[in-house]
Image (cartoon, rainbow, N blue to C red; front, side, top):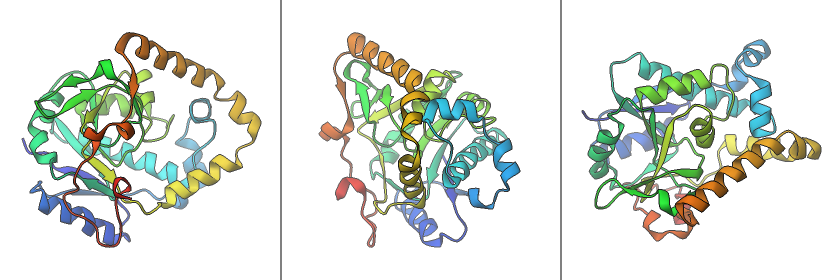
Length: 276
């Protein structure tokens, strides 16, 4: 069945909505469903506190949420819940700054077949920062799946119902950033895959969310960085080493020309990061 995307969009960001609609028409995708993004700044302190498991979040990220990150995580969880309330077997989730490849429609039938499973599966359409070469498996003659060791970015991904159920459970209350795919692999038991080539990028203009993240990182006391994440980072390094030993050398899309793609519609005022 054709995949209709859920798109996270602030109502006032009409230019971003137009950006997504232009791509939807260019790629002949079904009309998008719009999810009004949750504004973290509009939440009361009590509402924000009740939605977060601070112990898990600090152990994983070494800090708390910025207000933008909180709204982002709640928005993604909200979409998963809306999806589960439907009878659809899988769905596409986009943030309104996503830039999609012109080759995505040709890959969707094979991706739908991969998602039509009782196993919890997510397919990240954007860049994978690190993966083991031995984890790469052919999906079609032109597209391969791989298991990411480092991946973040919630701007474009596919998921099935089993994955949504586990991710809602893992994020109630919120325990990690919305796009912490390695957490969902390790803790929630979700099968997360990246793609070679990748099929989505983001607009290069820095978002308010990224600005807040940078501010939070620099404001965080140094002893937090050394202590609160030490165990999690050690565990993750051992996990990466294990994959390197058993699945071959580590690679990333940054050093892989197969990862380059042509966007379906080139924004006039904003360029994609891969084109800078």
